[in-house]
Length: 406
Ligand SMILES: Cc1cc2nc3c(=O)[nH]c(=O)nc-3n(C[C@H](O)[C@H](O)[C@H](O)COP(=O)(O)OP(=O)(O)OC[C@H]3O[C@@H](n4cnc5c(N)ncnc54)[C@H](O)[C@@H]3O)c2cc1C
Image 1 (tube, rainbow, N blue to C red):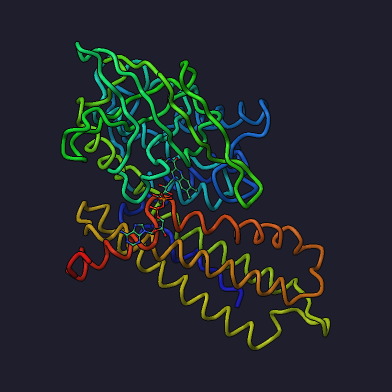
Image 2 (tube, rainbow, N blue to C red; image 1 turned 45 degrees about the horizontal axis):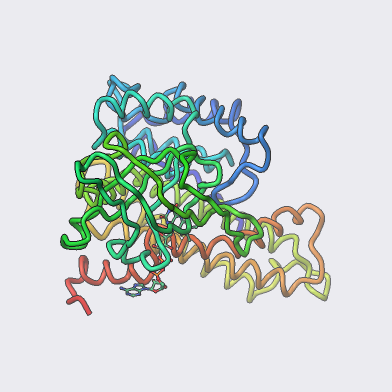
């Protein structure tokens, strides 16, 4: 049962990138072992003290300085000439394997958007601050009436007669990290008369400006990691527009590609979780005093869970291979996301079943049990963020199976 899946999972000498990848992986692994900021629970992590916030910002800066983040950026903005996309995937895998704090995907998405759509002045102003850990970003996209259907957003950015100043009014919700972000990537409607995808503009918003009111929301995990953001009379200028006025839809859709580096890492994540599941079953004692792992029904459920983990690994491996040769199918992302997030929930349900059937947990299993209780609550969020499972199924139906839109 205690299969070590890791050896044949990662991108190795036999896989894309060849021997260079192995050497690169060793360097990343050593760096993380020496300097990595530990991550003690899954999910995004809002700092709980000023000292912790400093640590997170320092760690992000260290990753950029070492060239493990932002290596794919244009060289003039700190990227590296010989950068290979496979290296980004290796970094994500090793961050997960090393239990290290992972870069915030909103910051990565913002960097991608600024590189692709920013003016030279915006790039000069914003990109070095991301690399320095000085600017944490949040995404101000979703609204109470606009999530899956983002183009339904109603926050208005009303231009003045000259089109130079915009007055922003509206409400955003589920804005991860907004309570400690320095900058927000905002989507707002600038032309309510245009076709709904066409009348939206992307803005960069300094979160300290008057007219921005951030209120954290407590999740069922007990932590408050995302927020409501009320925008009332916020004044933005031309310098805050990212890309073209009414061209915001292009900014948001192109940014999704920057999240691809996480796909491969998800398989590693599930394999680590499976090992945690076995550790839990070994230390959870049933009423007869034996460990759950000794029971045939638990063994059968673990075997079924391992099969699902293995399926995700194969799906992710195929996807990663296509990403690396830029031959992705549009449904690759939805398939990999659906498989990973739903399997994650299934593993946490099994973990809770084991915990519920136990009368005690051995001391060395207590921490694992705590992690599972958190993951049980947190894992559901992943089936919603970045596109809910139902939306992923719809995309797969249309893009992979060619089914008509219902
Ligand atoms: C952990 C987390 C972090 C997030 N971080 C951010 C962030 O930083 N910034 C940000 O802007 N947003 C963020 N979000 C919001 C996220 O993008 C939305 O929650 C998501 O897009 C779903 O939108 P919704 O919550 O409005 O649900 P809805 O779109 O109202 O969906 C409700 C339910 O209806 C289903 N449904 C909706 N439309 C269809 C359809 N066409 N077919 C079938 N079923 C459908 C959905 O699958 C879901 O089950 C975050 C969400 C989570 C959970």
